[in-house]
Amino acid sequence: MAFPNTVPSTALRLTQIVFAIFFCLTCAGVIFGFAALKPVLTQEAVYADYCKPGERTTDPTTGEWLLCEGQDIKFNFMFTLSAGVTNIACLPIGYTLDKLGPRKTSLLGANLFVLGNFFFGLGYRSSWMDTYVLGFILLALGGPLIFLPSFHLSNAFPAYSGLILSGMTGAFDASSIPYVVYRAFYDKVKGGIPLRTFFWFYTVIPFIVIIEQLLIGPPEIYQREQAIALPPDVEASSLTRIPSTLPVPSSDPSSTLGIETPHESAFEILASAFSRVHLGAPEDLPSVEEIMDGKERRNGSLHGFSAGRQITSWWFVCLTLFVCIHVRILLLASHLRSCRRANSETLPPFFLLHYPASSQMARINFYIQSVTSQLSHFTQSPSLTLSLSKIFTVLLPIVGFLGIPLIGYLLDHRPWVEVPILLFLMGLGFGTLGMSRGFVPQLVGIVLFCLFRPLMYTALSSSFVRTFGFLHFGKVYGLAMTLSGLVGLINAPLDVVVKTRLGGRFEYVDWGFVLLGCGSAGWFVHRVRQGTKGEDLD
Image 1: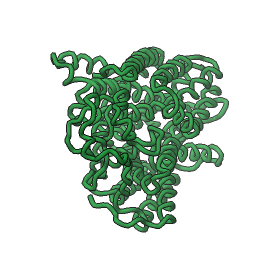
Image 2 (image 1 turned 30 degrees about the vertical axis):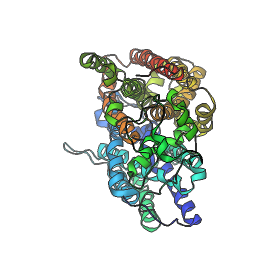
Image 3 (image 1 turned 60 degrees about the vertical axis):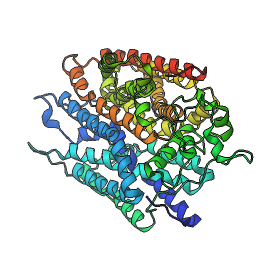
C-alpha cells in the first residue's frame, strides 16, 4: 500500500481526529449498551410471543412490563451472537484494512451500520427472517470497521499519539452511551420512543461517516515517522549484533527492531498504533539502549520470532484463554496435553496468554447480557433491581472512560506484576459481591466490574505487546480475539441451562466463573512473575 507523500494541513488533521473520536463514541461499540437497550425491547414487546401464557405481567409498583424467561433467552442469544461476531471479525477486519485502506474500510463499515439500524428498526420477523438479530449482527460488524481504521490518525501528530489514541479508546469504552441516552428519553417521553423511530433516525450517524470519509477522510494510512534515532556511535548494521538474550531470527535490522519500512503493511502499522494506547506511551518501540542491553527480555521473550512460533507458545495459551470462556478451558487443556511434544519450545507463550484472556471475555459478556436477571435473582426486590440496573447502564461507559488515567498510571509507573494481581482481586471482588443481596455490596460489585472490564482489555493488549512485540502483533492478537469470539458463543446455551435446568439460579455459573477466573488470573500472575525475574518464559 502506498502512503501519502504530503502532510495535510494542521486544521485538516485536527478535523479528521475530532470526527474519528465522535464516530468511535457513536458507532464503535454500541452493541455493548445492550443492558440499557434490553428494558426498552421488553416494553416494546419484542419477542413477547416467546412468553408462556399468563407469564407476561406488569410490575405493580412501576406499571412496566416484566421480562419473561422466553424473551430473556432470545435477547441474550442475540447479544451473545453479536458480541461473538465482533471478536471473530477482528482478524478479517485487519486484512480488509490492509487491502482496502482506511477510507474504503470505513465506508464499508458505515454502510453495514446503516443496514444494521435499518433492519433492527424494521422489526420484521418470520419463519425465515429475524431482522432484530440480523440488524444487531450488522451493527456488531459495522462498529469495528469504523473504529479500527481510525487508529492510524495518531500518526497525524506523533508527539501526541498517545493522547489521540487514548481519546479514541476512551470513546470506544463510552460508546454504549447512545442506548443509555435512548433509554433515558424513552422513560421520560409519555408512551416512549418507538424502536423504529430511534434506529431509523440513528442512520444519520453512519451517513455522516460516509460524507466525512468522501470529503476529508484520509484515503491511505498515515505513515508513522521513524521512531528510533540511533546513537552517533552505533551503525545500523551493528544492530544485528544484538546479545543472544534477544532472539533475532531475521538479519534485517528494521524487522528485528520492529521499525517500519515503506513496505510494511498497513495492518502492522494499525497493530502498532493499537498497541501504543494500551501501553500508555506515545511511542511503541523500546529505546535503542534497552535493545542493545537486552533489557526488553524481561517483558517478552518472543520478540522477533515468526507468527507461527508465537502462536504455538504457552504465553499465547495463557493470554488467549484469559480472553475466552471458562467452559472451554478443560477441553483445550486436554487437547494440549494430547498434542504436547517432547520439545516444549514448539508449544507454548501464545497459548498461555490465551488462558487468562479467554476465561474473562465470556465472563464479562455473560454478566452484561444477564445483569438484570441476576440482580432480580439475588436481591429479590424489583425496586432494587430497577435502580441497580439503571446505575449499571450509566456507570459502564462512564467508569470505563474515567478509568483511563488510572489504567495508564498502572501500566506506566507501577511494576507490571501488580496488574494481573489487581485483575485477580477485582475479578474475585465483583464475582462474590455480585451474588450478595444488599444494595451497597451490589453497587460496589458493579463499580469493580466497570473498572475491571477496560483494565482487562488494556492489560491483555499490553501483555501481547510485551511478550510478542509488534512484528506480528496484528496476526497474533487478531487470532486471539477471533478465538475468544468463537468460544464466547457458548454463552447462549449456558444462558438456556441457567433458565431451564438450574431454575434461574445463577450461583452455580457465577461461582464457576469466579473459581476459573481466579485460576486463570493466578496463572497469569505466575507467568508475569517469571518474566519480570528474567526467567525463561517458554
